[in-house]
Image (cartoon, rainbow, N blue to C red; front, side):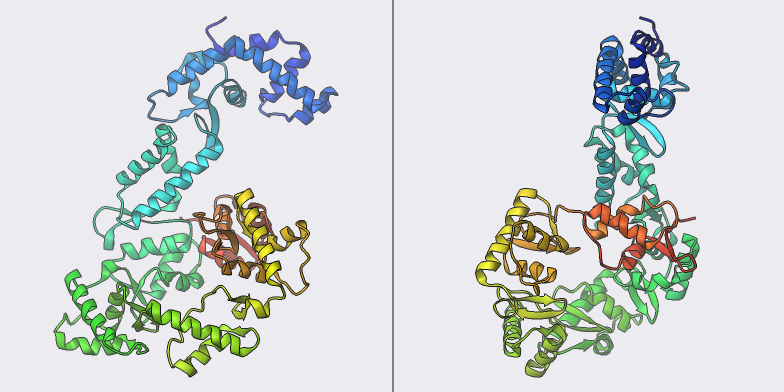
Amino acid sequence: MSSNFYEDLMQVITNLSKRRQRVILKRLGFDGKRNSLESIGKELSITRERVRQIEVDCLGDIRKACGFKLNYKLEKLLIHREKALYISGLEVEDNWFLGFLKHQLFLAQTVKKLTNYDVVTINGHDIITKINKNQWNEIKINALEKLKSQITKRKLSKKEVEKILRQVAATYQTENLTDLLYESIEKQLYFASPCGKGQKILCSIGNGIASFLTALLFEANEPLHYTEIAQKCSDMIGHDVKGYVHNNLKGLAYLYGRGIYGTMEHFPLSEVDRKKILAITEKIILAGPPERQWSCNELYQKLQSYNFNKKLDKYLVNIILTKSKVLKSVGRLMWIKKTTDLLRLDLQETVFTIVKQAGKPISADEIKQLLIKQRGIDRFLTVLPTVNMVRVRPNVWGLIERDFPLTEVERLKILDIFYKNLLEQQAGLHITELKYLLIVKKVNLPDNVTDYMLLSLTQADSRFVIRRGQLLGLLVWNDAKRISIREAVAQLTTKVKKPTTILNIRKSVEKIVGHKVNQPLNKLLRDNGFVRDKSSKTWSMIRSK
């Protein structure tokens, strides 16, 4: 044997028959392209299974001759390594690998076939590592989730981010890929200085407009008007996104004035003053009747006698009340007491009576109007499903015994079928799959039983829970064990490289989630950083300059 792996490898292959040589060289991509079993079989007039058998035999001969040494060399290069090991850099690392300069794919495939290591393309480079492509994707997802959970508690410096990424990589014994991990998710990380001062810290994560806005507001030295935010966001992204900014600001920033938004970093009062004001306003509201609605302007007027900082106004009062655990906002700077569990239970019983007396399904809006008329309170009540009352269609409530064309025996049988399927498959069921499952199980359903009714029925059974995206799962599960439409759209942010139509996007989403998608996707696309070109009617990803 020579002192060169390439020569050793080619010597073994040269000793094979001509047909075997052609098979193994084509399967290992010697000419820069890895041929399929089927294409090689057609060329040699043999079956694809025979090609596979020849490949296995050839690899066995190669492994006996030089596979052990290859594995040893790679293990030696990777042990205690701090940086990634590139296929293209093996010749520099050890001259035993000389000769593969023009045959990088050949070398990569040989490593994958003969050793305990894999070759994964990361950021455009072929990397030798202990993990496979799926595990690399898991690492990236876990890294982003870990960072998201951390920045809800505290802001992170770049060094702290790198430390967390190293910890995530370490769980897969791939600390040497930390730099590549950072590089892979860097475009989703937004660093900014608090109010434009000091060290830049991680303040938002993601591809959507919301991430840009969070970073923009975080770095602003004062609250900004909507028009200025929209213009700066458009400049930052490189596209006109003014039409999407307003909705994204809701729940993301605090309202400091008419059309003016900022963060808690911009709040002019001390934490001590905020706590005092919160305690006083809670006392005022809690002392009033349950149905009383309080405007922030009214509360501000009452606070004048306490001699607080003159900077206080109705908008600041509203921001302070967002920290309350006993009050809730009803919009337009108005606040009420949170309904107690006892009162809510009483109201739900009243709702049931209203639906029963209606004699037919009734809309949630009609229920609330009758509540106001009968009780004079709580037009903001959320109607909840019970063991005998669920929705028969969106926003319309009915009684299970009266408004569902199924007997109790039929309902119980259907629910048991759903339960057994979820247990066996360990994967959620989409609303569009429920009726098909029952057909497979030879359950005859009345024509007027809809997909929506079947999903609603499960809300009366404590074994089930409906997750986002109309996915049915078991209550004991942490999630639906199924990719939702929202998650599928998020996956497309890294896959859509050029403008594409909504039809193509819908097909891609359906392929990921495994079922028909009928819901509009426009909002989900915008939330994930897609913008629509009106002239070409195509969608593309927002890319920062």
